[in-house]
Length: 142
Image 1: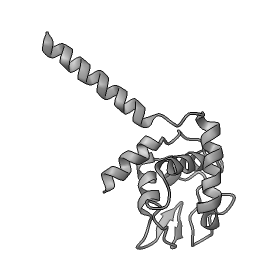
Image 2: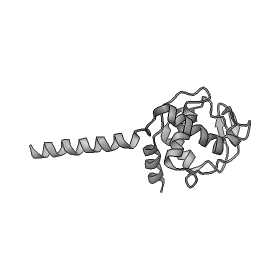
Image 3: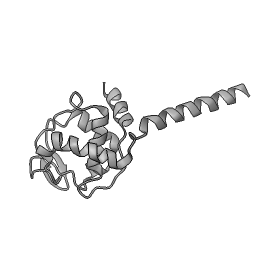
Image 4: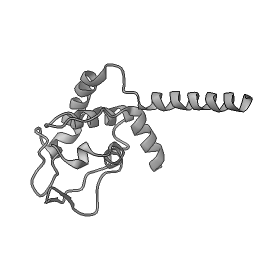
């Protein structure tokens, strides 16, 4: 019986920890969007443009692409580590400019906010990104 109680207790504690790590910052989507837009305007807009459509053959669009709407972990990794060393293809178009890593420039919260903004702007609609998700990926990549 003690083993069952111990297993249940460990499960409850682990579940609470996971929930805490993926919980968005207070204020919800509206607050994250406001903070994320500020980060986007300062850090991302020059390459990806105000409308998120990028620059043909150079900087990829952020509007309605599987890169943005797909796996959050992959997107977080791209922002942290950048994209270098070749071209990427999106919907048949090729883009060649490298993306610089932001791991030493942006905080976990700033990355979460800007990705939430991008995933919910430019015609996109996707789940929020939490700072805990960025923190976990940052630790995994070290």
